[in-house]
Length: 59
Image (cartoon, rainbow, N blue to C red):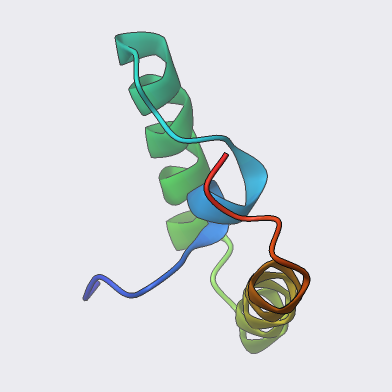
């Protein structure tokens, strides 16, 4: 899979600054790969736009 601007791990978990956070984000990425679908992609896009518009990013 090509990397993108956002993903399932980015919208579901905070910034990964520890090894445990990195492992958790990897688990989210593996979940995404297993359950890839247009509806999941749309959900990610909508939540990313909400974060950008409402300014809730950069935690």
